[in-house]
Length: 360
Image: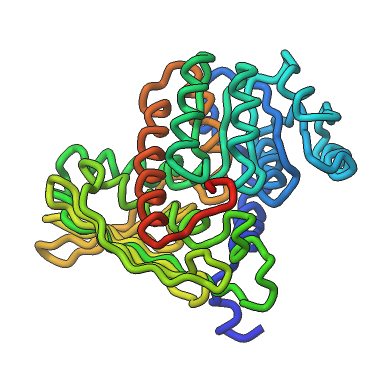
C-alpha cells in the first residue's frame, strides 16, 4: 500500500471499523455509563445497528431485542450479537414491558413512523440522524414524548462526543473570549451511477442536507449563543431533485457568523474552525472527533485537546439518553439544539425547493 493510500481518509463505515479495532483490547472506561442501566431494543439491522450492538458489547452489555422489516435479517443479527428477543412486528416490540429504550436506526424518511409507535408506547427513544424529515415531524415527536413522560434524543454524534462538552465548558467559562465565526466544511464523493442509492434518491429522503449537513449545522449551533435568525444560501440540486451541494451563511442576534460548505459529489475535508477573540479551535473529522487543536491569538501557541474516544461514539449517545432518563438536565436539553438544527435544515430545503414525497 502506498503512503498516499495509507493516508487517504476512510469512509464512515471503514473509519468506524478502524475505531473499534483500536479499542477492542482496552478495558472499557468506567466514566461512560454512569446512570442506571436501561434495557435496549433496536429497530433496523443496518450499519448503525451493528455499531450499536458492538458498542454495547464493548461495555459488557447486550441488546434486549431487535425488530426489522425482514425477520430473517433480524434473526441473523440476533445470532451474531446474542440478542435475547427477535420481534415478529414493531408493535410487539412496543408492547414489550421489558424494553425501556429503543434506538431507531432505519432510513430517516421512516423515523417518524417508528417514533410515533415507540413514544406512544412509553419507550424512551434515541433516533439516528436525521431525527426526522422536518421541523413539523420533530415537533410532533417532541409533543408525543412529553405527553408520555419519556425522553426523546437525537443520535447525531456531535451532540454527544465528550470533546465538544469539554470545549464548550471552556468556552462558556470565558476562556476563549467571544465566539465570532464558525467555518465548517463537509464533502463526500458519491458516484452518480446508480441514482436510486440513498444519497440521491428523493424517495429515500436523499441529499446533502439531511445526510451530512446535520453534522455541520450541529457543530456550528453548539458554539453559537443563540439560533441564527438570518440565513442566506445557494443550493445545487441533482437531477433527482435532492440537494447535491450548498453554501450557507448564518448570523444570529449576537452577530456570530456561521459559514458552511456541503457537497455530495466532491471530496473536501470534514473540518470545523471555531474562531474566538483569544483563539481558534480546529477540529478535523469532526463528526466523531476526540481531538482538537487550539491556536492562541496572542502568541500562536498550539494546544492539543483530547476528550473521549472515537470508538465509543455510540456509547456516549446511549449514555446520554440514560443520563437524561435519570434526570440530567444537560443531557435532556440536547434535544433543543437538535430542534434548532432541524429548523435550519427545514428552512434551507424550502429555500432550495427540495421536498420529499412524505411532505406533499
